[in-house]
Amino acid sequence: MGRVLLETERLVLREFGLDDVDDVFALNSDAEVMRYINGGAPVTRAETADEVLPSYLGYYERFGGLGKWAVVEKATGRFVGILMLHPAPDGPLDDVELGYRFHRSAWGRGYATEGAFALLRKAFTDLGVRRVFSQAMTVNRGSWRVMEKVGLRYVRTFDYDWPDGPIEGAEHGDVEYAATREEWLARHP
Image 1 (cartoon, rainbow, N blue to C red):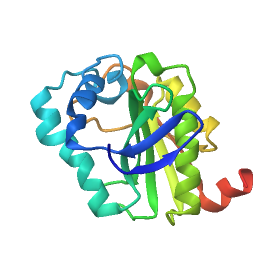
Image 2 (image 1 turned 90 degrees about the vertical axis):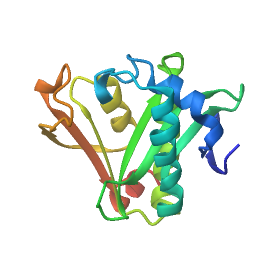
Image 3 (image 1 turned 180 degrees about the vertical axis):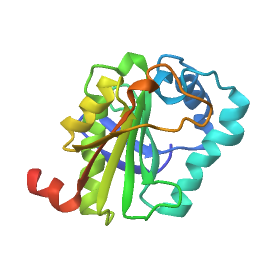
Image 4 (image 1 turned 120 degrees about the horizontal axis):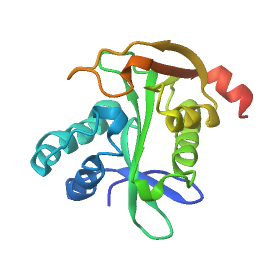
């Protein structure tokens, strides 16, 4: 088991390890989970082992307490998803993106909100983060509802340039939510 970043009432957020390949592959292979990320395009186990997981591990070396984290249910020890908090490519280290991806069996249980809220608190109080933003397709109502619940505020709707071409729902644009350290801590002392 990788180093634990934080724990909540029901969850443990820990570093990924090479032995997490099957869990990450299973999550990223679910077309419904990936619907708003890559249009549900399939991934292979080899891509997961050779590209995806090594990219996750690379965050720990580059960014310390920022990166992609395995989310594990405390009660069962079961891997239920991924939470991420890291700079955009070529972005400043104190302006980071929040993201989340969970197995369908974990949807509707409040795990994304619980984990993301704890991650925001750590970012703003321990990791020197100045601003957190999050983006989702406008049609991905569940994702932007999590953004609202954890204290991010609507910033804009924009057209995203999908690298492999637009996916279903892209014509409605994407939304961005954000909060600065000062804004967030004023609302969540």
